[in-house]
Image (cartoon, rainbow, N blue to C red; front, top):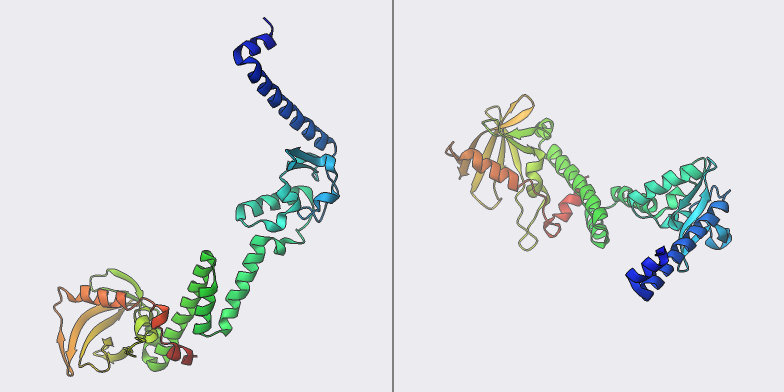
Length: 308
């Protein structure tokens, strides 16, 4: 029995038609590739990537259902390579790092020298614009920065802008503390450790973010930090201005770190040491909570803008 008869018996008449169509498509695609192999586009530099599809030799295009699926391109080595049409005609639209790096690799195989339109490729144009916006933040106040962040739809870029906002706010905190408590300036970047040596992963200036930057927008309540020296220790007093009750945290400097030595309760000017079994836990809770950045609606915009 012949091969065709065998196929006919196995698949039937309509199955044979389907196979014939498949064979036709494969052979058609193969002939298109062979044609493109013989007639590749060449001398396309430096504009490879932004070529006009209507201006290239149609024999170099591999088509499928009236759609270009690849383009034969002559590389610098003399070899013909088949390239996605997006890399030949639409390189400016590349938006991911993966496709951008792939295009750069192809460009180096086909053209000698840098890509003259590299800054215009979408992913790079976006980075350049992002960098420009970030640079512009240096000349804007905190309210303007918040507005820019709120208008940004790109989540990744929004995170970058928030990082820049927090850098600015940290600068304001350190400047405020340096001006108000000059003696403490040299300790602001010191790490805080608990009495047993456990790390808090906090610096002195960081634990005063809430108090310096924050204010209750409804009541105007603000608890500014108070730092002073006592018994060769740095004391951080947390006490609302209208209250007689406060908490004092005593720090001892050792090997460039600030050790939480003790915690006291202060009422009407009288201090009482807190139970040493719980004072470290209390200190860590207070310091950790006060190291958060206030939400935007609780920022003390007036004070922040006054700090230069």
